Image 1 (cartoon, rainbow, N blue to C red):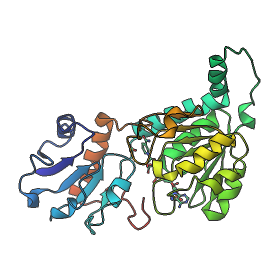
Image 2: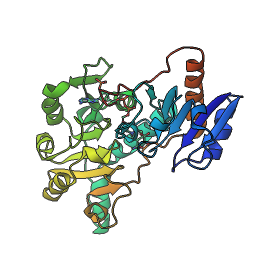
Image 3: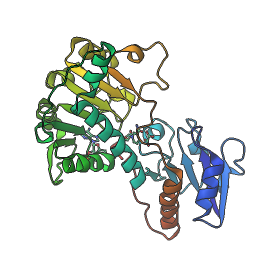
Amino acid sequence: MTTLLFSSKREKPELWRGLISQYISDLDFRVWPTDIGPKEEIEFALVWRAKLGELRTYPNLKAIFSLGAGVDHLLRDPDLPKNVPIVRLVDPDLTRGMTEYLTQWALYYHRGMHAYRLKQLERNWEPKHYPHPSNRKIGILGQGVLGKGAAQVFVDLGFDVAGWSRSEKNITGVKSFFGNDGLVPFLARTEILICLLPLTPETTGIINQDTLAHLPNGAFIINAARGAHVVDDDLLAALDSGKIAAATLDVFNPEPLDKNHRYWSHPHVNITPHVASLTNAPTAAGEIAANIKRIQSGDQPLHIVNVKGGY
Ligand code: NDP
Ligand code: OXD
């Protein structure tokens, strides 16, 4: 028997029960909080924003799987069990969704659509030339699974692409900036800034007055990572002054975004409700089931989180 606890308010347990049991025939699927059964029977947990302190109450857990790529929802738990591997979601379909979202918004800004939208409100017919993609500098904070996936597509579209990460990268067509020393030169060249960092103590508030000041005037920002990467008052001030021409924000701190927040009505802010890339249950279930089988065969699961590093 493979006993798995499912805990998520955003995903439908019945859907996941059906999908995972297609791969694991002896699946015993339990649902938090109504159908947990004896806690000592639970071997695997599949969670999104589990109740704080809950996971440490299962003494025989072999792995905790995140229902999303980000694991900040798990690592915020001060009582997270210490010797149980935390496994993040890596699914080519999640990368595809993120790349779609980022390509669409980057092209929107690159082709001047934000300005045309505002001109339309004034009934103003004013065609403008735009730079060749080779003269448009896109910079991606984070060169992990999602950052690399998007960078590759921007390279294929002919953009001048750079990435910033902790360690140096060698990705064809992508200029690598890394570490604290690499951040300022990376920002100084970036006209469309995309955030795809994990939320950790080092990356919290990374889009702030100081970092924004290093971007070229009139830069665009797309934040598809976590709301707490942005110091909201600093971004609003930069948008008000025109330093930043426009921002697309998919993530907020907290979510949902407060109805009275200034972002909602700001003419240079485009909001989406944390949908940049939604977990696609049919493909993600296959990835998670394969990882469970790996553990059952005595192997390490893929994509274990470095808890100390925070991602
Ligand atoms: P990865 O763990 O694969 O990549 C993280 C990247 O960030 C790595 O390149 C890493 O550098 C870099 N990084 C981490 N800390 C630092 C630091 N202090 N300084 C410089 N670089 C750093 O993550 P994913 O690409 O899979 O996902 C990224 C994030 O996207 C998730 O954590 C999640 O928050 C968000 N997300 C948002 C979604 C949405 O719908 N809005 C959907 C899915 C994910 P290095 O390579 O050197 O280790
Ligand atoms: C994720 C997310 O991390 O949905 O996958 O934000």
